[in-house]
Amino acid sequence: MLITWVYLLVKDKLLVWWRHRGSKAAKRCPRSGTWRVGKGDVKQGVAIVTGASSGLGLATTRELAKEGFHVVLACRSVGSGEKAAASIRASFPKASLQVSVLDLCLYKSILAFADSVEALVGNGTEHGPLRLLVNNAGVFTLTQRWTDDRIDRMIASNYLGHFILTNRLLPLLQKAAPNARVVNVGSWTHRAANFVPVRRQLLASGFDGAFRLGGPQFYTPAYSYQASKLCIIAHALALHKRCYQEAKESRRVSVNVADPGFIYSALLREVPGWLHVPAVWIYAILRLMHPARVGAQTVLDAALADPTVSGQYFFGGQGRTLEPSKVLASTGIVEDVWRESCAIQTDLRLQHGGPHIAVPGAS
Ligand SMILES: NC(=O)c1ccc[n+]([C@@H]2O[C@H](COP(=O)([O-])OP(=O)(O)OC[C@H]3O[C@@H](n4cnc5c(N)ncnc54)[C@H](OP(=O)(O)O)[C@@H]3O)[C@@H](O)[C@H]2O)c1
Image 1 (cartoon, rainbow, N blue to C red):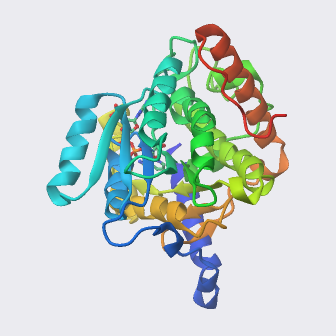
Image 2 (cartoon, rainbow, N blue to C red):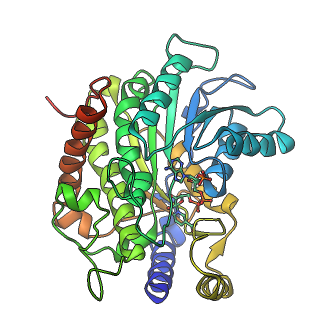
């Protein structure tokens, strides 16, 4: 895993440099003034960041607050969210922030969170419409754990919870179209995910067994993590097709992927020190690691590019983009993941009740 990930990161860094070198720099997607709908202190609208309590989510929240958004910190606990909000206010007292509870592993928590957002932006409140959803939260678990609905926690946190949340919030984003956007946080590690035909059980189990090495007793967390990141990127591409390419202009929501590179964060907290520390040293010596605030610049690039920029994979900062893994273009995996995710969403609604959540593009 370590060698493959280093190799892939170095390759992507070289590729992005090559693609945008010299005169080709003009091909970058710069941030756009279109998002500045107000002047001075007038609010830009509402932005949601999932997993805003630490790492990349916290750094992204800080930057979006500086841009004038009212940012909803979607966190698993109020305590960690408030702590994060306080740390932002300490350096930027004008920040307009609000903490709301969201556990992406719990269907009912996703519905309750979406209801709170609806109440916030529903009737044209002071903060303006919902303009931005940053699907950032993620985990890397060393052992396999399950949600109450028997879904692998890594796939639920990193992808499936975001799939359902996005569908539920889409009508609110469409009200702000075309200045509305979804940003999915991806990772270069998705390039190591092999293609397997996606079936519902396989998806729900975090591709458990599909890539298993050495017999059924071994869970291979790196493979499941990579697969979950392949899924969140596949989701962005499927959403881009339905909500941007095939949508009427007045209802267009753009969708981009942001890959922050390798950043210092608590993501690999479960990896034992004897493996984690040398790995971090190798990345640091090769100058492949950055503070979360640097990774957040790529998220901001993806979020604040012109509204006509959609379906792009941002990597390396300064508005630079790359192509995601070829697997996504050639195997039908984008539509497979979409179809099976829709089926899981329907299963969960039948199990838990609650309102019908429309899926974009479904007739
Ligand atoms: N670190 C890297 O080098 C790197 C590289 C590429 C991509 N990424 C991606 O960047 C994103 C952020 O990761 P990070 O590095 O900033 O790690 P982090 O510091 O561990 O942050 C992860 C955040 O996600 C939240 N979260 C986890 N499970 C959740 C759930 N079920 N519901 C709601 N929130 C949940 C965590 O909340 P708690 O505090 O409550 O656990 C935390 O706020 C992830 O999607 C990750 O895959 C990271």
